[in-house]
Image (cartoon, rainbow, N blue to C red; front, top):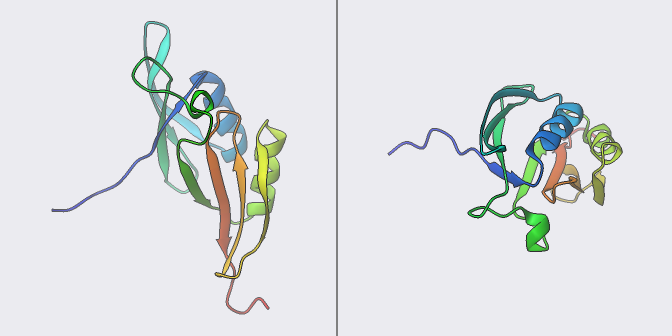
Length: 131
């Protein structure tokens, strides 16, 4: 059995606002958007470099993490400049949970909670010759 890919699907309150946020901070592109009853039931978001994720509006079946009182999913994004990405996420309405810093396990990482309650670890490997 081959597993081709695992794609996260974020549940948010305000999918169109989330699409704008991710477009601004990640340079994301909306690939597809479907709605029913005035709510987004499926949106595919493409990221520079080829990665993607999905999102949808919260409904009676799927609750967003803000209603649950915590994060729903912890996502890790590897970026060439995690410091700049964390700053952009915060400037767009996110909250810095942990400042980006060099970690003992060989990563430069920090954590940002986006305006929709999802937490993102932003980082990159520290080059072996850096230090």
